[in-house]
Length: 248
Image 1 (cartoon, rainbow, N blue to C red):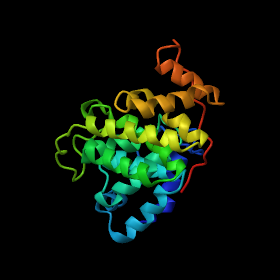
Image 2: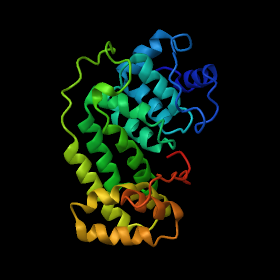
Image 3: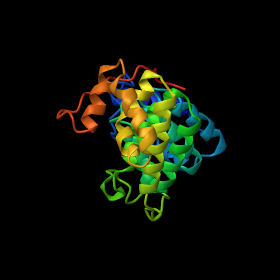
């Protein structure tokens, strides 16, 4: 078994990553810090290593080292799939969680990633629902446009055909509409309000109720976002940062 915590600390120090909120986007090299044996062990992901790697994935800072390993080895081991998805939804910055979503989508296909996100959304906490909302966005990117050095991944082989995900997007929008109606949590409604008008086209009665809630909401962002989506405002409002804390 590799000393994963020690290796991760060295990686973070090498890349000067000291805060999970300020440097989550870095994806630099690891070969000069991590011994080749560690890279091989990551790809093989034996049981003892898996236990430690899962612990890394649950740490707000050290999961960034996990991302560096994924980029260095150009693979994400099958046993880590669910945990890398969880790392994506627990990454607070919606611009950085793509570094977990893209590798999984390239290796395993967007549909599998999307289905896992839907499963988490239906049974997860409010924190997880907010994270799923931002992670789902990156599943809409065509796989050929996802940037990641995957062409010669270690043991990854050819990726599976990229099955359509349009139906999953619609399913998520419909779930989001109902969640917006039934869950008054501010962060949840801020995370889902942009989906209301899309789902309202398929479920007009519930859509009208959600639009009324958004129009009359005490939160300025929710009110502004719904009128923007309805074409009544020209400038998209800036979404406030979520208030949940990182970590599982």
